[in-house]
Amino acid sequence: MAFEPTHYGTMTNSIGQIIDFYEHPIHGDESPVIAVSHVHKLAAKTDFYELDDMVADHGEYEPWFDDGQLFIGGV
Picture (tube, one colour):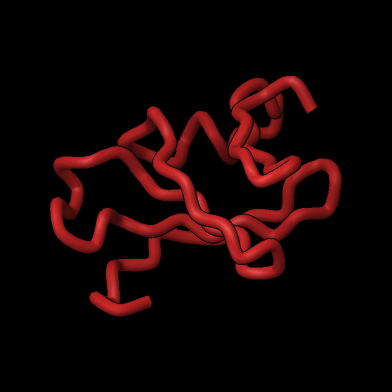
């Protein structure tokens, strides 16, 4: 990644995808968290400013990638 944004954390979702979370490389924490799948070579801005809901055990807001798009919840 060109601007070396802060890496917030990593999770493995319920379908086995490894998702990394980063701050926006220019806007920092004033922009929603970016979810990245290095395996799929995809990155997308989430609607979340913190990881808590996305990584919670209940999985209601779990991020996942399919067909080049980011989805939140509903796996």
